Amino acid sequence: MSLTNWGTAPKRFLRSQRAYFPPADVADKVNSICESVFGSTNTASDLHINSPDSKFKLLDACFREFQHGVPNSLLHTMTSLGE
Image 1 (cartoon, one colour):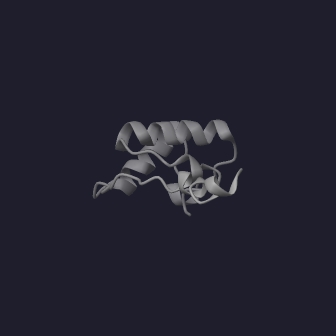
Image 2 (image 1 turned 45 degrees about the vertical axis):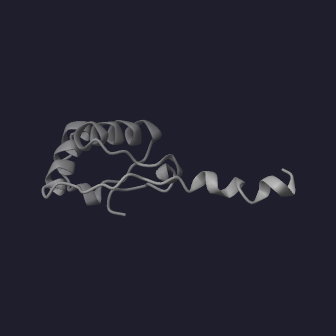
């Protein structure tokens, strides 16, 4: 990378995210999604995401319900819903 491009390169990761205001019953909805995806009766905050497949299934179901996604730059940081 040349010195002239260095000043703009890091800004690629600073894309703005649209504002999101979750519904009041978001915790209940996430618990319901977890039950349907994993068949678990545990609360969502206790759920650990152990595989990429289960993370995809969960996030896909959440996106369908809430119409809001997780930025790609944060996907690797997710290991449980309690975080």
